[in-house]
Length: 355
Image (cartoon, rainbow, N blue to C red; front, side, top):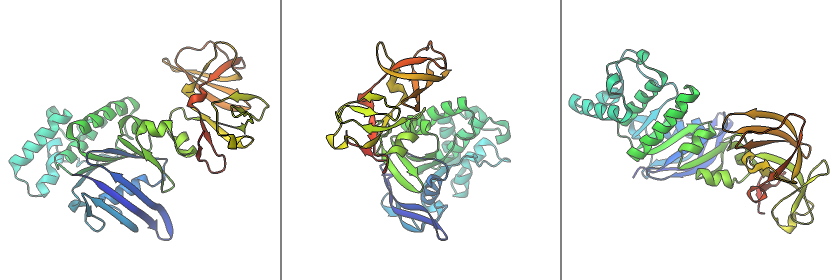
């Protein structure tokens, strides 16, 4: 069993706390992604799991054994870094087998493990090359191979795709996910890219300012975010937040410009209160007939989709259409909002309201 338990973990630099009592359970074979904006503490938490950062408070356990005071080499983990961290003077095979050599593994066993990992990663023809002769994606695969040959209990990935171009990032996402499916090894992966998180993870942990905002399956977080931060962070383009006041009829939201939008029935206790109406761009469509009036501000065709920014109720709102849109800036159009997919948030606490 390769489980990881993080209990009330804290980290301070001097008098400045940066991680505030984090609790996470990672199951055997689970692919968990820590995601959040720069400076939220996700990489610091990963480095504490690896033993590269000391823990100020709490505990980290791997397979039930507390590892707070163990050296990185004694934790049975393997880490893949953002900058690959390959030895330039060594060949691919030497880079992949170096940790085993240091551990005193016999040469035939090193060769067997390197060859097996190379076959999994498609590196067989490159084993004699040096890092300078490789592309960015090939170097990243070598870094992954170096981790695989150690057969660790837990793989740790620290933003491994951030140095790659967009096309290669998409390819490598698929390769890492496929690798996890083949090896069934526990993976803890850090990224600031929410697309990586949504497409790869079994479980996402959304962090903000050193705290866990929410964790769960990707689509659960996407459909049922606990608060405005999670709702706005997951999704591209981001969820629209429309400020308004809950109508007394329990089925409308009145907007600052005097207009209103029809919504699904909400709790009567919200009537007359300020709320934030959240709706994702893909849940706004052109109306067949009468809908909500909006002024077109910007149209951005992407080929398969059209992104359109409109002024609705005095506020800018982004829509994603699945087809071409015959409209121009300044035009008034009619929109339909899928109110059954919308969410309501408390503007003061930012928490999602039960509707």
